[in-house]
Image (cartoon, rainbow, N blue to C red; front, side, top):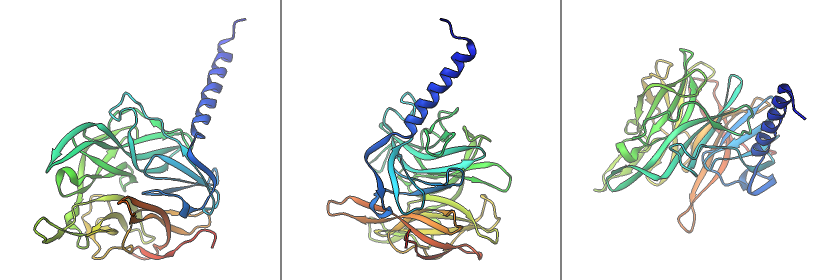
Length: 339
């Protein structure tokens, strides 16, 4: 029996939906449905509150996703990304600092992908792997997130990371990202315009500021002299209630992982960017973002950082209350969901 064209189309669509739903709900090893936030080990936590599904979605480094109705109990992790093995990323790219953004009617996954099999440079004895910020897309907040039109967003010969989304006063979307210190030895934060559907980049990246411009981040050089730290990490853009444009970003004070804030004098990405004199977080908290709960509470999501007995990094998602009513962001008390 021959099927009509319309029926064949319906069947194909149904199969596509079933496959996609199955992929979006694929559970990773160690999946649990009763996790507390402090039981999750995750760097660079980003939380998207989605009003349509009435759910919080959390992702970060590692490319996994957790879900919660109330920030108290979490389900996960889920596997939600589907990259192209024939692309520059290779078969199993490392995924760092993933962020979820709803833009117009779709959901976008900004993340850093690393192909460890491809070496692009060697600087001061450091072999630099192929690493870049990239964007995936989905119709749903829990994926699957898949590649779009452009195979690359940023130059192949530069290591870039921690891309985030910002729509500036010109109405255009931009990726704000870090050009990694491993190659330029003075990490930068830069911007690049994106296409209207975020499916690729437009033009070239432009410098916003350098790590060395920070008055608070410090390290010692090979001679023991104290100099500005060279790391830029985790930019996140925001506006205060007074309309002032600011940027959270992270670096180091010697061995402590710490976060600072910069403010744009022009109110646009072009700056100039003026750095606060002191960090905003206590030592060993960083790589944050801001979101509002369904009850309207403004929170900062970030991770705590400590070194374990074997030298491993132990990073746990944490939440802090934030006050943005004035010209400067103010960090409040730690927020413990359910208390």
